[in-house]
Length: 254
Ligand code: COA
Image 1 (cartoon, rainbow, N blue to C red):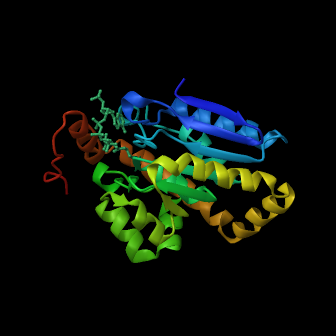
Image 2: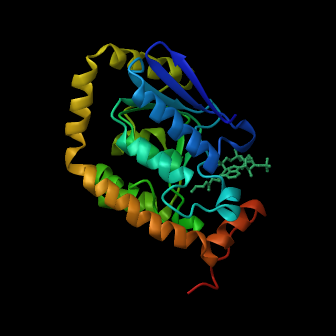
């Protein structure tokens, strides 16, 4: 099992655990996270969800081998189920991020309520460099949160950025020493779990009210482009180059 769940009283911890591949996410793993979150939503005893990886990696993003051999083709794919669940979560969602948080490892944070990052966390949005385009409604949410120019820098250049930068632009709640990351995230989760649940739920719902329709629209439009991009020669070159441990060559593409 590459997705582990742990119950700490009213807190459901969802752990991404695929150490040999830096926690890269397969369609099955997305589906497992979505199933765990849906079960938590339906369980009155769960008040808060907390998602995390290991000290070595939050997640290396989508499994690139999976992208090549089993690209998500429809709305029922694991990744779309995950995105619908995470974007529609009514219970508080906390994230604890250390090491690389690539692609969806960063974009999923835009849907979390409290995000704690270790000082060594390295976020990145390398979609363009992979011949792809943004997903998880990040083409809408990132310019909204960070401002257009900062979002453009992160999405067009696709270079890794620090936890401090992520906090400055509003993706991360607080940056903490790596050794204190889980304590910090769990302390916040416990505080949330003590708050009156209906008040929390309504507050979250109200804060997201004006974004709800746009998020769903962005998810659908991005998915159409993303699926087409996965079949593109640009994406094939980028992903093959990753596994061949060489720089991709886009010079022949118009
Ligand atoms: N999909 C599939 N396999 C992946 C992966 C991914 N997204 N990310 C890492 N891996 C695999 C590597 O191929 C390697 O496997 P191997 O040991 O069989 O060769 C293993 O995980 C360790 O990765 P490695 O690159 O050696 O670790 P690192 O610490 O040097 O770098 C990353 C970590 C995350 C920065 C780097 O692996 C990376 O850039 N991965 C790709 C990220 C990506 O593009 N994700 C898709 C976003 S849409």
